[in-house]
Amino acid sequence: MPWSRLLICAVVVLVLGPLSTANAQAQPKAEAQPKAEAQPKAEAQPKAEAQPDGKEKGEAAAEKAKAPTAAQPAAAPAAAGQGGSYNLKLKALEQRVNELKERIFRSKARLNLLKETVLHGRGIGSRAVIKHKNEMGSTFRLIGVTYAVDGSEIYSKSDESGSLDKKKEFEVFNGSITPGNHTISVKMIFRGHGYGIFSYLKGYRFTVRSSHTMTAGEGRRTVLTVRAYEKGNSVTTKMKDRPATKIDTKIFDLGAKK
Image (cartoon, rainbow, N blue to C red; front, side, top):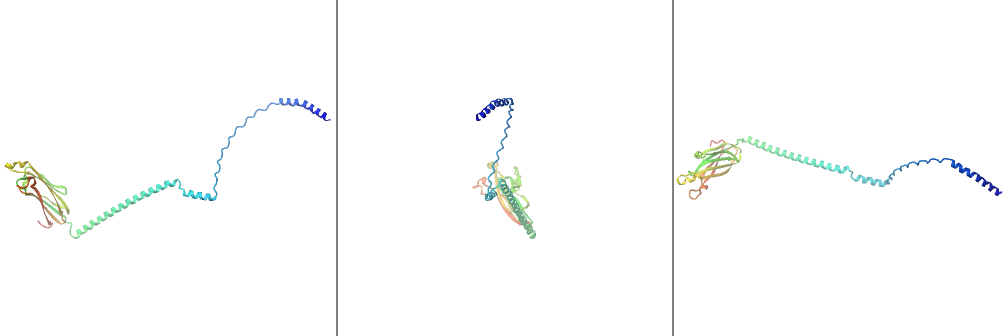
């Protein structure tokens, strides 16, 4: 029996084997399917930062509050600049106030002085009289003279002919002057004069300069007499040292007739 089954199986294999091979060859091969395009890989997602726990969150918030922000450094210099500008304006204002106080003080002082002057009958002013007097000898001839008060010229004359020398006394100035100290400056030019063996003196010029400080009083008339004279003597004093000037001062009340 077993041998008969084996025989049958062999016959079936021999018969069905060629048929299955023929059928396989008759079927067309399936077309190769194109491979799917490679899908781009998803971008790597950043890993989530480790979240601090509650205690760490509190410390981080405190540190963040302490740390200056980017706006804070810029705000600080701006605030400092505004403070400096305010201080400068304040100092300028204080200086201006002090100047105004000084002006007010001076104005009050002038008002008080004016009040005192009016109450006591002052305010009359003062006057000055300047006279020229030539007391030089015949050896010298005055050819030029200049007078100035506080640097301002009030009289000047030059004459080579000798007519100026003939005026032995004349008035240079007579007018009002502010009370106080004043400087009177004088310049005189003399020419040598001689006859015979002394005719050589005509070629010499002698310049005399002098100044005097006068005090003009309120309600007073100050009379100054400028005298030109020869000092020394003709024997022991050199010719160039002889011409000199001196000033006599007299003070009168303005109401006086002299």
